[in-house]
Length: 265
Image: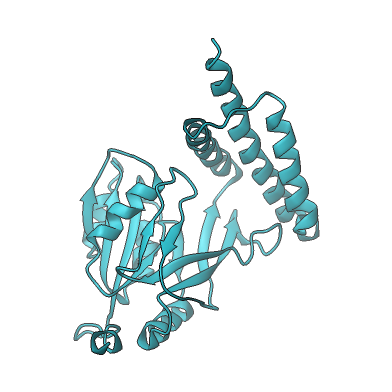
């Protein structure tokens, strides 16, 4: 118990006894901003998935510990690799397209100083083409990202990984700023990659479907995002989010249907 009372204390320069962990690949265009936003942490661990754009060099220049792991085995497993390299009492998991504001940094410092819980969810303020979106199910988009090391691990999911934690959970108020999609074309490319990974994961788990599944599931996701979650009230951004959500779902089930048909050939 004595160790826990002081596990928030940082080094002599005032930084927190906090390990920030990240997985990256070809993120040179925005990694610097992300790393500069977590300079309050004593340790940053970056697991690189085989970048060829100078990402590892940028990370090292800003003091991060970089591990090169190009043998991609999914988001969950890659993040677990990063977690296993962390050495400090508290861990904050973020992505290269996320930024910790000064207000969130201050809240994190105050939170781990008291350490009332073992894990904390943080609301994410998602952005589309540089604009914050607070509708269509994109807000508050809570994710568990801050936790006491040794009390949590990442699931093995290839996409949409989860943090599995023990102990009690609390919540923070200040948002994590998420530059979700900088353009519609970037969104469509990402959704296509996630759909491929997601469909293959579903197929491996025994899921099968026919050609009807893509329009059915895609249509339902559009209705839920646009109508039930208020996307229509958000104007063009809300409707754009609804379209992207529906597109990602439709692509995933379309690919699963293709894999299902291949089983019978």
